[in-house]
Amino acid sequence: MTTKNQERVLRGIGATPLSGVGTAVRYDPDADLSLPEPPDPKTVESGVEVDRFEAAREAVRERLQAERERAAERVGESEAEIFDAHLQFLADPQIEGLVEDATDEGLPAEHAVREAFGDAIDQLEAAGGLTSERADDLRELRTRLLRELLGAEATDLAALPEGAVVVAERLGPGDTARLDPDVVGGFATATGGRTSHAAIMARSLGVPAVVGVGEPLLDVADGATVVVDGDAGEVVVDPSAERADRARERGRDVDVRHEQVTTVDGRSIEVAANIGTPAEAAGAREQGADGVGLFRTEFFFLDREEPPTEDEQYEAFVEVLQPFDGDRVVVRTLDVGGDKPVPYLDVPAGENPFLGVRGVRLAPGERADLLETQLRALLRAAATDAGDGLAVMFPLVATVGELDDLLERVEAVAAALAEEGVPHEVPELGVMVETPASAFVAAELAERVDFLSVGTNDLTQYVMAADRGDERVAGLHDPRHPAVLRVLDRTVRAAHGADAWVGMCGEMAGDPDLTELLLGLGFDELSMSAVTVPAVKERIVETDTEAAEALAERALAAETRAAVEAILAGDGG
Ligand code: PEP
Ligand code: MG
Image 1 (cartoon, protein in one colour):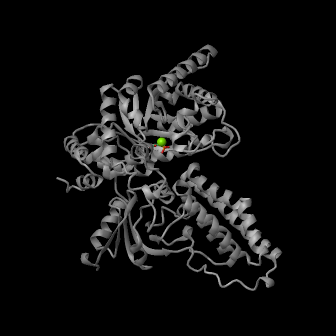
Image 2: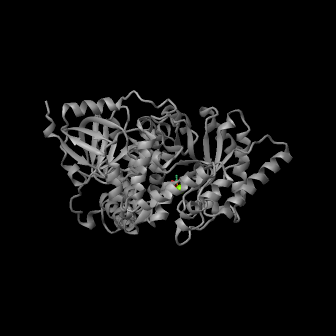
Image 3: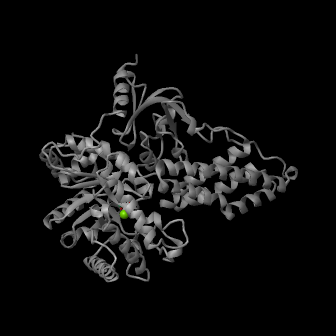
């Protein structure tokens, strides 16, 4: 029996608040892909090599297409879109041109692929920010092409033995999507953060995962017994029997997910899900979500040539409302532009997309029609049988003037529908607090609407001036900084002072280690990836409001993130 003192505990970042135990399977897709020196260029026939490349490309395309379909069924359309990026890169004429140039110079197809992708990966990495994340996509694609060209079999992540725990330096989004949550014990990676593609995919799949463990993870031997504790953010190698049993039991916890939860002292807290497509609604309900706290409507607008019609949107809203049968479903109006460009909308990203025309800023300009169409669909959906629970919120509001304008538009749409004799209702209305400006005028905003919902992903980036996608400033993009906590505190007070309820739908809401703090700050609703709902509900039922308020008070008085972390860990006085 393994004794406790033989355990090796490696610390990382919990990507899903789930635990698993199993046998380590080392995964290094590039392990056997080293190439010999290229042959004499004179012996290489460019045409033959281009044909080999084309054949490999077609084989990879077919596989990607099949995997995309499976991912769409399993985790929903929005996560499956990760594969579209790979398919686009694969068809990119620039990459094709680079490969052909290299074969013309006498390189065999595999060397040409390595060279062409190498340059592109270096360029993306040098660009930093969100762009550098695309380098992982290209790396994954290069590996697939090389495997095809070399006939090298990879460890098939879709066919792992029961209980396998994948241990890797990095996992691409496509790698992660291949894992079967009913089979694997979890995964751990040396690189990555809470918002990396692999982490997001792990949450959608419900796979225990710890990321960002660093170099020591790579010493874990194939076949070792490993616990992946996503709650504690730990990977435990050679765990004690007690710890392994605990992880196993937590994996199949009888939980409170299907109950509406209250704190120990009886305060009721709504725990909702963030979803990106109507297809995810039923799954979110199964995970125990009381409702939807954020339905991102961007999916309607991506991957197509023109905006969706009013009827298309109306039908999708009704589809999302149905599984929740009158429970609250918060739909966010279109939040594209800026870092999420939609080519046919013809809104240039600008020099600094995050500070440019995004969210509701699209509406006042030439694309006012987009909001109007969406509002018509929403007001009609609110009048259907399941429409009682519908709520609508506006993203990236910064000023009271913007909100007044938006509310006028709602009234105008209601008046137009009335005139046309179309059944409609004005649903509950709310504003996302994602900019420091909106936090400073939160009281005035809250007086005008029913609720506020804090989007900490953007709010943190704007408060800390730290790009949410740039790993180099990930330490700053952390909502546990006292500056962010104090913004949250004033927002909650402002909302309650104006009799509005206040929720949170940024990633912070789904971290069970922060649940007590958020309840202490006074949040009424928390909305998150559906997979984290059960763990957050567990924390809520263990929380006592008075103790939570005392914790929040100490955290708000802290001067540094480190001090906040110490307080949250229970050793901060
Ligand atoms: C947020 O900014 O926290 C948020 C929930 O919106 P998104 O992540 O879609 O920008
Ligand atoms: Mg946002």
